Amino acid sequence: MTPSYGGLALEIVVPVFNEEAVLENSISRLAEYLTHEMPSTWKITIADNASTDRTPAIAARLSERLPNVEYRRLEVKGRGFALRDAWSASNAKVLAYLDVDLSTDLAALPPLVAPLLSGHSDISIGTRLGQSSRVSRGPKREFISRSYNFLLRRTMQVRFSDAQCGFKAIRADVARRLLPHIADNGWFFDTELLIIAERSGLRIHEIPVDWIDDPDSRVDIKQTALDDLRGMVRVAGSLFKGSIPVQAIYAELGRRPIVPPERPSFFGQVIRFGMVGAFSTLAFALLYLVLQSPFGAQQANFLALLLTAVGNTAANRRFTFGISGPARLFTQQLQGLIVFLLAWCITSSSLLVLHAINGDATPGAELLTLTAANIFATLIRFVLLRIWVFRVGRRDERSAIASKSLAGQAAP
Image (cartoon, one colour):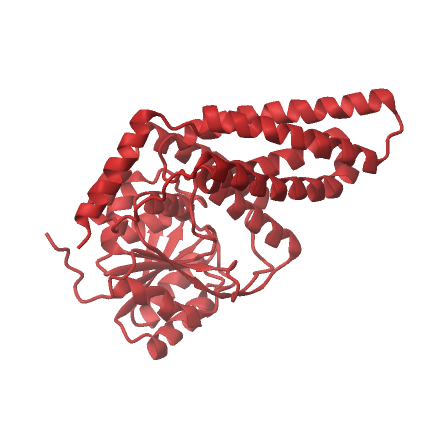
């Protein structure tokens, strides 16, 4: 049955918790912008999740004073809870949410929702990491954001660039299908939504945004980062176990797949692995030089090797061995971790030998020794990746051939 939207095109949810200082000004600005710039029908919902200050009174007054502004109260804290509650009750065709500080320039709102209203895309997100994005924020938050999104792309094999920007929209029919499978109700809520959506073959549209950091942000960065890492492990486990029905969602909503590329020949794998290894070795050297002073030789070696191993495994999986998609991803990550630990043992042993020979070895000598050991560990890594981690059996080859054959038959 085709859902009824009652003529409402867009509902923008603004989750709030103790935002008495900025709420009235932000909602008034947003309503004024939508009145003059948004051609489609719209509504703003202030989703209060258990505020204890004057936020409820201000929100109620705004809903009475401003047309198309509604107030919802939820007696439990959590941005995910607020979005889930408001989106589930909405009758709009497209659902969006904005952070109450309006850090993102509102001029990006029409292009955010346009591909969803037209049916071209399923989810639309703003990205602060695009080449044409203009972002003003401190180096600490910039580093944390880029590191988190890099780790997310490499470990979860997703392509969207900015999971945390508080500027997203989704088609209502897609939201209804995905919400039951999202376990998180805090800050990881929309990251989990995006991971499941991309793994289910949905189209995620990105637009570059102009974004100014809120200096009064009360987000606990350390706790949020820990929660996000736990969320990534949980979602990876759910995908591996098959408890998230990505195939069923794809069959219902997914876009037509791209025929997977052919697996490179052995010679091609050697060349590609060498290219990835060269970049990884350079990245390792740079990271080690940066980390050696504050952490010491052994700790810097471990951290540099861990960071480069994450990118190296992901690059080799897709670029060297031509493997894409979620199949065996979690298993291969665990096997890649074992290979990483072996490489770490090789390089750590080289440091122990160097210090046994020369107790006053300079950082340059340490780097030269580690680089040579890292090259040897890279060769071992290639052998293990090819014959163990990313080995393709006869059954997998027959399955790939059959998939391409079916895709060719489906082509017009």
